[in-house]
Image (tube, rainbow, N blue to C red; front, side, top):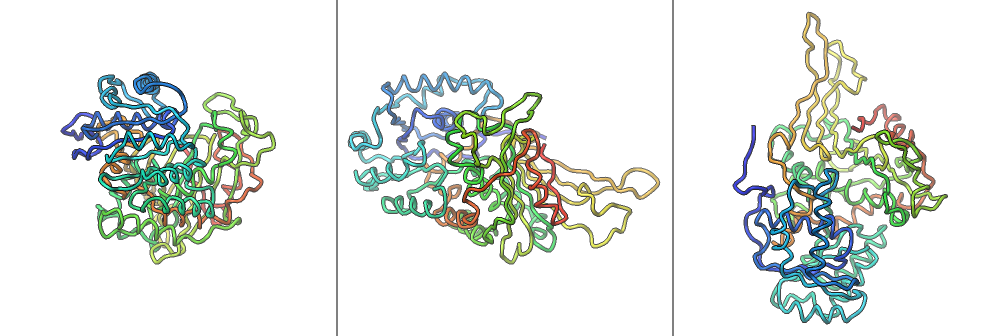
Length: 500
């Protein structure tokens, strides 16, 4: 079975053109702009979903012209497009479409910590609709927002003015509150778009569709039927060239209060009253607010040692460039948490994420309870036997349902089987890095896929007791993490489903 669309490449389900706008990119020479932001704008242009009157204003320190900047990024995008492992990959990169996106690009060379940049922006922007994209290190967020506010660039006298803030939103509960205080002092909550590209990925958005448009899931989506839930985000890569950054972040801050909690909220939230941004974000916030604060006894830190990945020897984390030889920064975390509400009371959620693991896999496994007794001759303790709904998110995208069936033969022998839906089997594959829907929604004024201030605070509150440093357990690169992570489930009589 195949499904076609009316526009080649239009995989976003969007056809209405957003109103005209200008996109100001602070940090236009950085990696985020090169790998994700410009490719996403290109994808939107292919889909016919960019405003007809659209202009990029690129802000960075290097001296260059707008067309020189755009040409350089096109050559880099051509390299990425040929790499099947890159976020942005497509068989043919159309230079004409790229030029359409960047045709009117202006490049503003300057230091965005100085007032003269904002005085120039005032002249360039006038009363137009403007999105300010903070594609810079988190330490600059508050300063840029304050400078925009001080120079009157966030006043919505005629057109709209919106801020897009990348994660991390603070590095703990206190700093998240401080950042939010600065942002809310300069702009209204309706102007602030806190972006997490996990929410823009098609498979992740599909979780809510699967849950709330299919009657077969909702009646059993509760503590009476579900034994536990596992959420895994495993990578085979290390810190690459980001060792200096990662030393001050670690796996917990980098992945849990944003990416993993995004998945947790999608799989466990209550049905919203509508698809309005306020209704959906309220339910996500309520879910995170119901998390019982996580203690050290339910938390495991790990750090990868040397090992082998896909036949190649890789170094230990403390031997990576930019990493201290005695570093205690975690590259792996696992935890058990509980959601204290009527639907999920008593159901454990097990979360794990790590680098240099045995496989690359992001998925959610909803593990159901076993029958009350073994009517057939089956091993009730074998984790392969039983019902599991697996939401496959990356790199394979789809849903798999595991259940028991009779093995052919004269005797009643039970065998585990599965039924699987894969996106690539039903829908045409097209380039999508995860930012396209988010950028489109910001241009259209829809905040449903963006984090609210209350959601961010609830996420940090849940992990506030474990965010402090601690000695990590070591695990071999190419393994499934430290033994302590396996013990976290084993003490409850459970085990992780294998990565890969």
